[in-house]
Length: 380
Length: 255
Image (tube, rainbow over all chains, first blue to last red; front, side, top):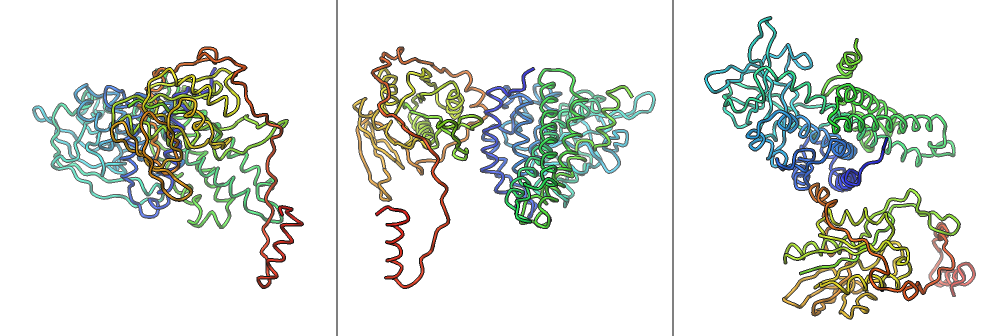
């Protein structure tokens, strides 16, 4: 057993930490307050190769492993949850399906610009009446000769305003038992009939781009179908397995920011003649935060390591995401509590962490869905 | 142009320094490239990019320095030499002799180093090195340009700027403001592990251990006393001057 990072992994972590502290963290408060998407950050990240971190070198990426990717997401998330989410969605959901299921031609056309950081990746799965329940999918892809016509809508889609293409799931037909068959399609965002209806106003992660998409007879050439007409469901389950590692890592990052802020504040704030950090009630909170953070990070990195070894990681990714996201919400809640009144106002960053944290228990499968995934994996 | 950069790995500038048995405790300390050496590396890379040469990093230190070397290689340096032989760990005299022995056998146009290391802060090694190699040096530079075989450097002279012309090869030490060091890119990090790093011993570079033994003996290492609160003198000017003189004489005993 070896819990040490490789030289390369620790160098990547250190570089991202330094970059995130100097270039991302100073913008975090502003992008939260204004809801502005910090596109300049993504240009800088593209130049450093971060946007193609785990993508094959042959397709413009850096070819680093999933462990390095998880470390990078944690560091970016610690500096700014919004930027961390946009980054994780770009890599795991935007690039992930192209890397895993794309043909050489699809990768050359669509993955290379994403890995090089020329555009952001986006993945459209959720609909007003479908999400984890793929059976509710209403967006349809109708085959006419050598093209598909896609009609429907998608909601809560990250990065679409800055994407050149969105990978979209759509019903292609029904099997003999009447069950919906789902395919995945690469939809260029400049296609006729594609529209971004609106950008949502959100509780947290306000500097990330979350949109509602509409498709009106959008014509997609046959070559833009990802895999077969019936593989979309299987593909997105796999995509989400990988995505869960990144949401776990993002949770660890946001939780760490909250924990560090709370520890700092507890050492500075004096009440009854002592700093808060000398009071057992506060010490116990901080000890719990440190412990949960450590365990969450270990679980996330182990799931990432399993993925790198080519072994099955669905259960471990679900466990890591579930534990890390619940740790994140609890840690941010306690960080606000330790700050007292100061934690409730925006002079201190912990109220932002608290708002950002909540999505961790929702995105890429709610906590309830993670428990379902785990339950199935343990044979229930 | 070929550039050689002398680099030192130092404590993180935010590291808390503690002593154990009168020695600085290295346990659990974060190590970084000396920030002034980072400017030197960045300047070397800019020269390389503009003139199509190579950048070689030379450093002295134990096994841990390889991490700093790999970071320099990830930023874009081509190769590195590490003198990790304990016989090379001495004082400024030792370091300059060792670096000179490594560099003497190489061809170079420019040598760059930080103007000081943030740990010992002696500002001696690079200047001694120039002397040993018999090349001109310009210290604390904030700008460096080339005109054929002549370098034009602007140096920070106690707040003023001096413009100095020197013939190459020459040595320069970097001051803050020279440039903005780049982050290593991911591809750079991935390539760094495959770049050549040569480990050499003192004997291997033709030096006798006793000839380079340190000449400075450290008699005591201590952490400076915590600074007390300041005191603002009140009263009219003659009164304040009298009080100041009294304080300097009797309390601080500096006059």
